[in-house]
Amino acid sequence: MKRKALVIAPQPFFSPRGTPFSVYYRTLITAELGVKIDLLTYGQGQDVDIPGVRIKRIPNFPFLGNVKIGPSFLKLFLDVLLFFKTIGLLLVSRYHFVQAHEEAIFWGMFLKPIFRFKLVYDMHSSLPEQISNFNYSKNRLLIKLFTILEEKALQKADVIITICPDLEEQVRGRCSNHDKIFLIENSIFDPVRLKSTAETENYQNEYAFEFDIHNKYILYAGTLEPYQGIDLMIQSMAIVIKKIPSAVLVIAGGQPRQVQLYRKIAKEHGLEKVCKFTGFLDKKDVIKLIERADVVLSPRIKGNNTPLKIYELLSIGKPIVATKIRSHTQVLDETCAFLTDPDAESFAEGIIEALSSKELVEQKTRRARQLYEQNYSRATYIKKMKQWLERLN
Image (tube, rainbow, N blue to C red; front, side, top):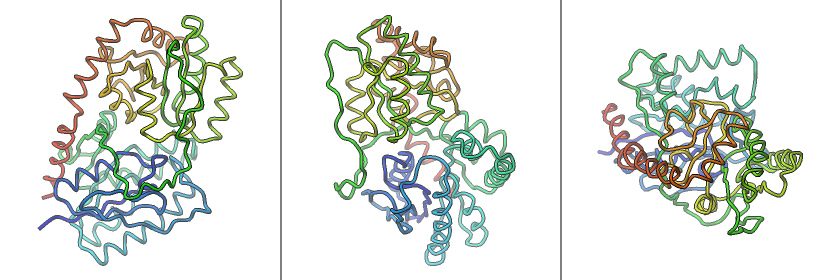
């Protein structure tokens, strides 16, 4: 008899704007390994085609706007509805385990002794750190409350899945039972199979500029949140173009208000002609940009979680320039990337070197592909997934 699981994903599933792809891939592989899944999520998003998975949604409230990345009052309201929907599903179905993503662990651990299921904490980040990183609140009492709740969740969970070495180390320092901790990086990139091709996202699908074969294209693709170091990256371009006048920075991603802000900053630095903003793009268009780019960037200045894109860039084999912070160095080193201090001058030097040293680029990209195949391939991912599922037997 197939095991049955309830996966709780407090996010728009599936929406490229707001869904960490890790939720999709974790669910996909779990289903491939023989688990029948009910996936409970927000009303926003598109249904995906995953054999063995039924998507259950709370009502959608389009007049309240889109759910943004990070904590918000809208998410709090929707999570209350998810809590009651969780109870409803537990009353009518018997689940071998409940897999709670992010804050869903809080009501998961409360309901565990009542409904007697095994609890999996799919931990994408430390929630108290997330509150701080997204500038949601500086209230010490609120952060302390989330810290206490997170401590309890780590003790109550039967399995804890972490997504990067730094998070794993944090959890090991806070949880006495190390055998239940599993590190599974977000490192696979199967195409997402939507049930409908109808577009429900208002995103741009065409670039607002023409590529010039004489230019050197530098690409940043991701969110435009403060911790991503977009200011640093724009400032570094003022240095880069003095050495390489043909350099063009393409910034893909961000909400309209964020794009407007950083376009203004680029103009203040006299860089409006060499900083191109695309706004939010579909994943397939981002891949096209990566293929066209000469160098790809990750200028992040804060945080410990490794960006999902780092694994994808390793697999593609494009020269990577990244800041020398824990988010990056737990995966990247000097053999596979150009690592710099998190300041504009150092970052500019890294970009210039990546654009100028053909032999070094070949060495680093070759090592990047090797690293991905050895540590982060689909086969490795499946092996790690099997390990935690076997623990729940």
